[in-house]
Length: 316
Length: 316
Image 1 (tube, chains in turn red, yellow):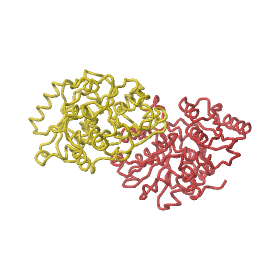
Image 2 (tube, rainbow over the protein chains, first blue to last red; image 1 turned 180 degrees about the vertical axis):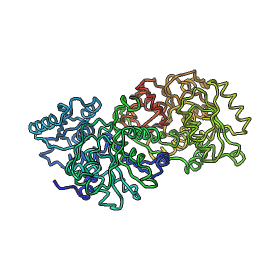
Image 3 (cartoon, chains in turn purple, red; image 1 turned 45 degrees about the vertical axis):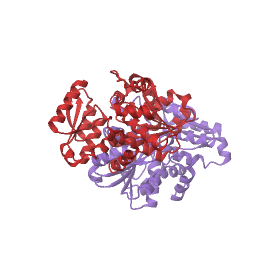
Image 4 (spheres, rainbow over the protein chains, first blue to last red; image 1 turned 90 degrees about the horizontal axis):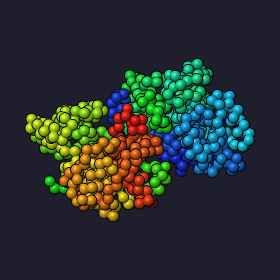
């Protein structure tokens, strides 16, 4: 499949506009002081479904033709993509099937159900997930909308950076977390096309530093089984997201678990924002690389805010 | 002392503007659905110091004359007012003394210290607090800036409603929580002067329903010792705040503790906003009085977001 272009991202922005929030960009003088840099936070925790994932899913679902829309869509997801696809499909009036591991958290199962997604459980292995998805696709004729390695998904995720650049033109760096790479590749496409002098950096947990290793080695290094608290970032890159990241991402910073929890708590305490661990990874990276970033103007994509309030890391 | 007028509130808005945030007004389609009404939330949890208290304190501190500013300011506070006064005094370059009960939470003591307030501890009784404050005032010659029963404080707190009305003109009701009544009386003054057809309602915990009782009986009924989770609302009305509330507040709704915690959690889960229990009381009131408010357009002042993250009510 061809990589998306900046035109695809502009078209995605127009397509999703009637359905999604233009999320605010917030700042915090207390956090700026703490890191001795200037930070702008693109608050995708305020996005529909509580995460940027609604952008890509909505962009994909509204590009189905009528026959496809009648058959429906399907995906596998243990988190935010399943909820996002379910909501977008509800808006379009399209059936939606979400393959989820049977050990998914109750909170996540409930979110998908609440948006009208039909849940099909599988064993918590890649093999079972792929078999189950294949069966669902065969039985229903649904269109597969993958969580990140897809041009329409990447283009949709790139619209968050589009809004950020419109609102804060004078940046040195834009930073996004990287799991499968949908958000980071979309961000890099937008930034490199519109403002090539601004660098795009990724941030990921040390416990799932596959993107960092992939960039180093020049080939996709799959993530090893990991229990990083940043549960949205436990996935490996795909060929499309890797191709974009290789071309347009200058650097990937890694952070330890303690720093992720500390950054997450700073969002809650200083900015009164509920941010999930994955969304706190870029701030953790800024804090862990203060010297390098001193005085810089950095835009951070705060990717989501879906947290189980009964299981907060500082109450563990 | 004379009650503040709408002119005082307009002047307060101009005076505090260089120092404070114009906080955003947020909405949530999911909460609107839940209560079958249209809600607008004025997010004072995003205000400097994490609460609306910064408005009144800043308004008062910047009205000191040069001689007063040299001598300093003093107050008693177990919470947000002490932090707000400390920050405003720091901006003005004025010494600040805060009398706090010796059993104040570590979080609150730290906040006052961090903003440069000099803490003077007292026993956790009204008598000790008053004695200690009197001694501080005598020794330092500082100007006493009370937490709510003061025209400059009331005028400052009224600026939040000013911004809300500018942003959302078509409201039926504006609702604010009521403890000492600074926020509610300031809100009522603004709303009644600018948009007399809009009603101002108060909301308070059933466990500290002194404002409700005071309105009923026509005289100030002091709050009984209470352990309501809404710790910002444990205080009694003052003569100034009561006079305004009697004249301009149409109704006070009361809510139980369970509903406060439920409303607080809804802010966190659905809106990704860190809101303190006191700030959740108006939403709790809307939920507990759904029939009465069905279809109405209601502005709610979300008063603050200062919460001890190590002691959340749903992890108790």
